[in-house]
Image (tube, rainbow, N blue to C red; front, top):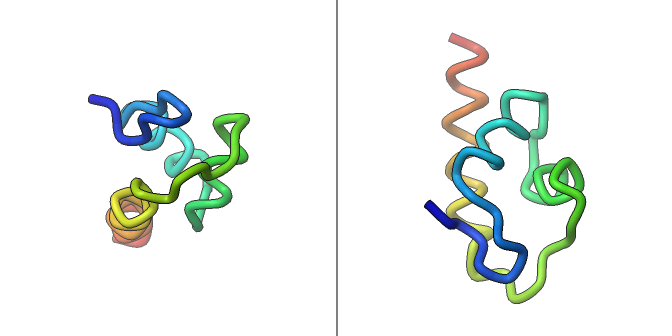
Length: 58
């Protein structure tokens, strides 16, 4: 499913970036080779980062 329409980022791409160590939305964007555009997806990406961080810690 698309999470970021501006950059055409999917949930799988974001999950892969988080699994690769991205701890902040800007690190997710960088890992995917783009930057935030409108910012509407940032909250969703942050939630995914937090979930991924909790999974790595536990």
